[in-house]
Image (spheres, rainbow, N blue to C red):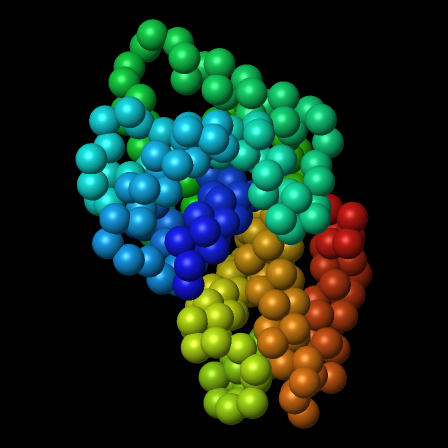
Length: 248
């Protein structure tokens, strides 16, 4: 992976972190470990400095090593990521990020005071402003009815897709990308076992992980099964939860 590709992946990972309930300054090393990003010594610190210089990330001013490189998206950073992934949000979202930048400039505490580490299967509490102003629909809690026959069928299908990605030799993707897809699928499987989770976790953590796998399997014999699983998850969400994932 080139350094420029790595910084793009850091930006996308920050975006995913925020979508799953983050919002605080987060350590880049933990972020890279969570999303399976490959990097060389010095890249984490350089990424923080370069992205800060561009105004895309806000982080501590005293970072001097990969271990304490950290940051979070700014409003311009959010726009940059959404140009990469082509999913623009409303203007109120950007204003909320700008509002957080303004709060960071208040003279209370140091820049590094609120740095958080990200652990796999764990989400970090968002600020009250994000909770109230950015994702009220996406942030609501939903319950998964494990007694529905369709639930068990989807559970089985997720495991089958994981095995397909793990064992198929002709995926046509790099080993690092296969590893990333597998990590996302395994996280999706764990989220699917939850009784209750946030709507955005359902979409980003489960549906998007399976959609990524379907893309990876599109040229294989498992393509149809992966595509049907995507449809089944959307149907389950709409029928049993009242959640329209296409419009979340």
